[in-house]
Length: 130
Image (tube, rainbow, N blue to C red):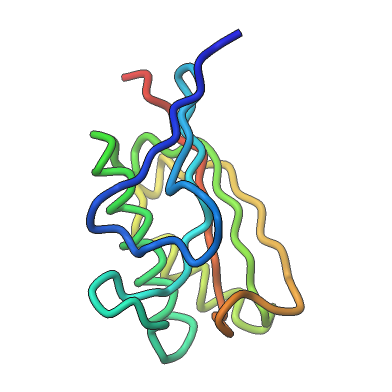
C-alpha cells in the first residue's frame, strides 16, 4: 500500500471547505477542483464564463507549479459548468491553456450549482513521471 501525501500550496486560494489542494499517491497527483477565486482577495471573480475559466485555470497552475509540475503533466480533467450554454466559450478558453496536440482526457458535466455561485469548476489528475 502506498503513502498518500496531503498537499497545501502557498499562494493558491484558501480552501472553502475541508480539503487539501491536492493529494499525491504514487506517481499520480489529484488536484481538488478549483473555483474562480482570486487568491489575493479570497473573493469569487465576477464575470462571464471566459473570465471565470481563466481564473480557475490560473489557480490550477498555481497548485501544479507548487509541486514542480505544469499543464503538460495533466492526464485527466473534469469540468463542471452550471450552464451548458457556456460549453463552447468554456472550451475555447480552456483549450488556450494547453498544447493543442497534447490535450488531457476530459469530462464536462452540467451541474445545477457550484459553491459561491461560480459558473465553472475544474479538477485535474496529473502525473509526476517525467
